Length: 408
Image (cartoon, rainbow, N blue to C red; front, side, top):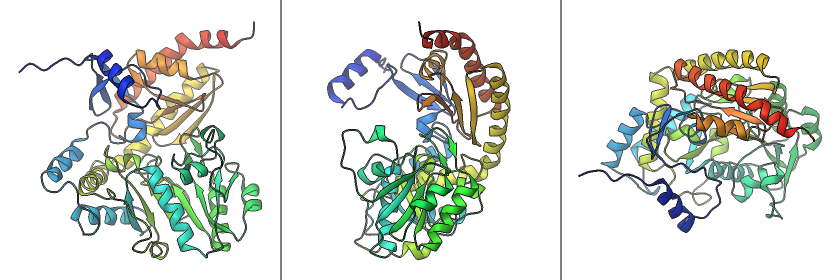
């Protein structure tokens, strides 16, 4: 039987009629992915250097994850948390061994993980503690507590009043953190590397001071590793580049190798506060997602992808440093491993669109920061090909962007 050709315009019209338009979508229908490549309905291939908004950290359809899903789907897809399942226990053990010996709770997304962490912080600290401190430029999710924790006013528009008890401090401002702290603080929630905020790396001094203040005031340190975790920075979690150890970390995105799963890992003492009846997630830690996550972690180990992320990251930064010398619109380069931001002094959207036309997918956040976050499985050849396309696009497009921005 001949396979019917997918009609891009028909699919887009279907979306327009039946899907709520809360996303600004580009007029492409993707139908297949493998490794660092995706193909649209017309058969055009794209090099994906921002796969799935960092969800596909092992590339598209990594074989060990695909096989784990197939096997698990034939045995047990879902079982509620009234009972035990083998994959969830295996996953929790692996996360504990790769982090700080904590215990895990599983959910479905990063925002749910943040909600669980914020709730656990209230349950694990004295009743009078209700305040949270987060950093300006942060992004923690779209549900109400996670959204309130997200210290970016553009995400708050039309949704006031938000939840009480949240205070924001400038990222990496130790003095502001000290001044904002008091005995009513239940937790400090920080990203070791702000992702959507522009690939801003937390200083050791800032994280160390946060940990010290939490200890002094009997509060908890929560680190949001939703984007920076699972080997992206060259270590399992980005906090492991520093001398501190958090009380709770949040996880999601590439945890499931492309499958939707989120979770928290909390120190055993803190984890005790999440007693039966205090929190739950119907689909959390289901056998299918947990089996995929186990396979993803085992793949990172077996293929030496932590070291590879660090090595590729150094290669990318070397090439970008040369591009920074060539293009005066590049004002800064930031990041760790394969979590890299290219700060521009011009808008980046036109560059992103031009790259897409040439078969390269990257991302722009905060209007002027290009995000370059390839999968850990990318080859050096693919990285160089991507950077070659970006360099060509900048050569062709930057003069026109500059000219358009100049006042008449």
